[in-house]
Amino acid sequence: MLFAWGVAARAATAPTSSPASRDEFHFTISMIGASVSYWDTPLAFESGSAGELPGVKQMVEPFGAAPFSGLRAYGLRLEQRGIIHHVRLGLGGQIAFPRWRLADVNGIYDVDGVARHISATAVSSKDLRLSIGLDLPIGPVHLYGDVVGTLRFISTRLLIDGDEAKFGATSFGYSAEAGVALSVSDGLRLGLQVERGLVGEEAWGGSLVLAFVTD
Image 1 (cartoon, rainbow, N blue to C red):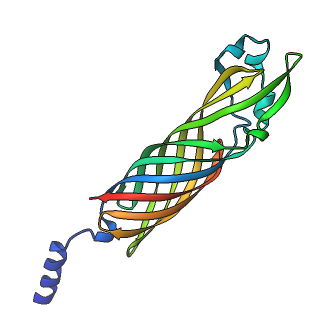
Image 2 (cartoon, rainbow, N blue to C red):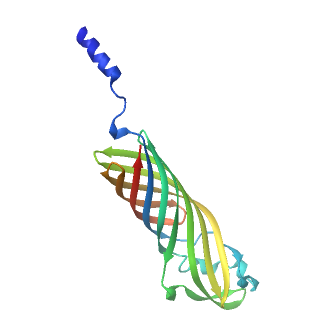
Image 3 (cartoon, one colour):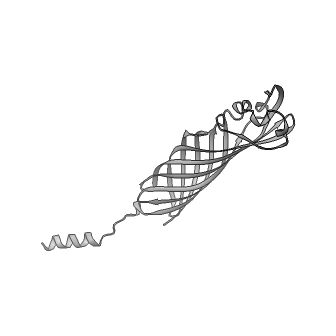
């Protein structure tokens, strides 16, 4: 009986959490790359002298061709994240700039019955991200997965017979991401992750993640 009493007393005074399941807060900086497509994004005319040309505000055909039909984008992502009992909650933002060849983004299009030379000069997306997922620590290695909702503010500039037109759109999409991170010190982790678009402009993506960790 004395032995049982001693075991019960030790169990009552033992810590209820272990370092592997401790609550954490992260600030992360990521270098990102992605494959994106804007061919079905509802881009609408916002400003520019080309808006005075007949049919420009209503045109849709140029947005089904390069660079909107599919391209690579690169940028930077900043996020704040909390991990509580293995549940990950994150909030952050990113900005991505697509890359293309100038020779691929020029064309002649019929705009209200007139053949016009149209070229893209800029495309960018500024995004807000909210994520929820799970974290599985195995020694110094952390495996994780998230479901991400992304609010995108997309803008593009076109030259139409030499006159500029700015178009923009706001959209929302979902993606799933998974990754692995290695603790290189008590307050620093380095990770790699991949992302697959489910709904929205992103098809796939990947990133190199640097996380600063505090309790």
